[in-house]
Length: 362
Image (cartoon, rainbow, N blue to C red; front, side, top):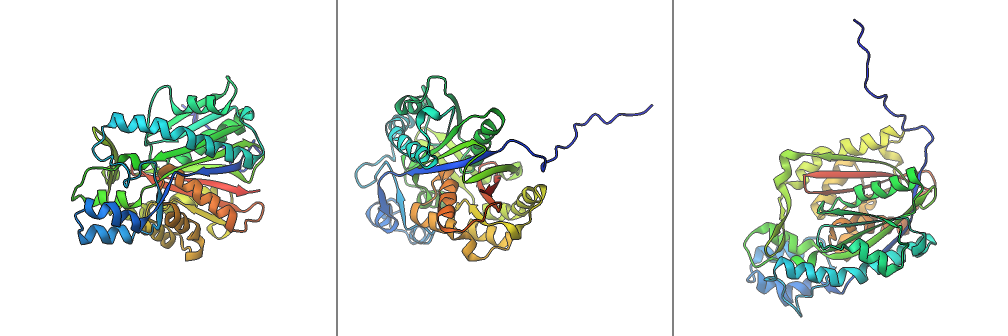
């Protein structure tokens, strides 16, 4: 008997196809506080003036951060999850509207041009959701399609980008993705857990929107790759508790990324006929300074190639899913990118998961 190979043929990634372009970016932030100011005025007492938390706080690569919940004026540490979600509903809407309007203006479009709205967040929920309220507030059409991506964590912007790029390329949809995170609503009660010290030292609030349109834009979205290592899942967690959401963050996370980042990046590039030497820009999610260093060492990048990541960490902190879009925005303002050059965006989060996007400058 002759056996027939029934497996689908591997698609030709170099064949002509419809493309999606990232045509606009826009960011909005709540009030800013300096890192040292936050330590001296609130977190020093929170951690009983211990030396180790102070060292972590002041050496994590962050100079300033943003928060809708200002610990100088309100203490949310004992708030219930319900109280935090109610507050999310109040503060998320104006920030999201601002970011989306900026992104659409950057792309030369208006709210009535949008066919698909995707909202990404892991820090707040409610129904009717933020996506519905944003569409109404912005005056989007009644037939706008909506997608909500929730609780994926810091890497969620990349699968979100895949979702809106697919809609643009396959169905000719003008799409907007909003990554909105209000981590300041999830400050936890005092604890000796060093993971909580790191989380409180790094995380910040932001709303960043990306407008993706068919066959146009500043970055063509070529491909997406992912790698999840379930055996290391407990190393990064984001648990729902009665007192908001609680971060778990092992110091071994950079070691896991070190094992996987090279393979994911080379897989993306080689499938499209590129190699690392041709990459014009690296938008690496700065989960912390050590993560940026590990990625740079593993990929053979010099310090200047990761300046955008360190700048975003220093000026904005880790804004969860919104952060990699901030890095991409910083890159396009500061780094010359010849048309046709590849750009890599990557982010990391619970799972333990690494997501990367291959973009091409246009």
